Length: 115
Image 1 (cartoon, one colour):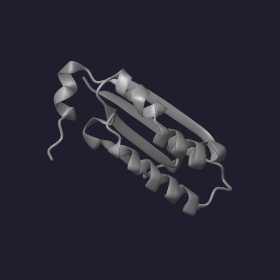
Image 2 (cartoon, rainbow, N blue to C red):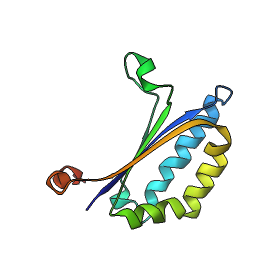
Image 3 (cartoon, rainbow, N blue to C red):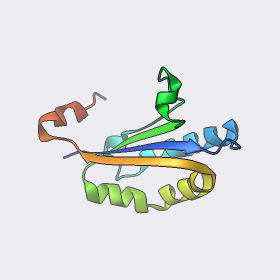
């Protein structure tokens, strides 16, 4: 089974690009956690949506893959995750959206990436 974890981040307008870039760098390190399925964690931004207002002001996105709900819980409870979010995100965020879902067994083949 695969569980997909999606988070969209929106920072306050007074947060510098340097801070957001550091946040992205630190988020990417979370792919090394054993609870991230095969190191599959992608961070990206800014949005290239046209028109940009459809992005609702969200600036950074994270997508990660986990074996199951227990692995996602382990990821979120990890010291590394807590440090990144409490240091670089929560004190500076304007908004955040999180959406997690289990991949349908018929679609599981799409979660098999070539190495």
